[in-house]
Image (cartoon, rainbow, N blue to C red):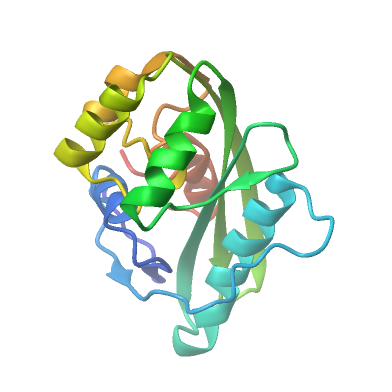
Length: 198
């Protein structure tokens, strides 16, 4: 059954990765990035940060889309379930981040929420993904960064591209979660709102 909801669908994100993932479902949608302060709260656990921000993004744009299903998502990575690894933004930060990830296991918490701005019903899920990194020499890190330039990716490794060469193992219930939007969980939320992808 094609997308037939009387409510429009909006992605509250500027991420090209999330947009590409959502395109896979074949649903028409608008994009309206939410402008938020994404600073973690004092003592806030990484998974709580991801869940709070995903929900906040959807709610932030709701006044502009009063009869819509709004998708919010956020991803937080950590090496120790305390220290958050963000987007590196610069080459130097990415070198340092990948150096820390060398031979380590990181957990990427990807949260998604679906907010019905007509009924104020919020559905949310968080999907953890454990990534085991290979030993990464400085030469390997530099070569990778010069080829891929993943400075807008949490953890500095674009797993859907050349970043796959940096990892030994990926464990997750949803392979799309690591890229930025857990489509399996999202599909369940859409179906709960009467939207069926197929």
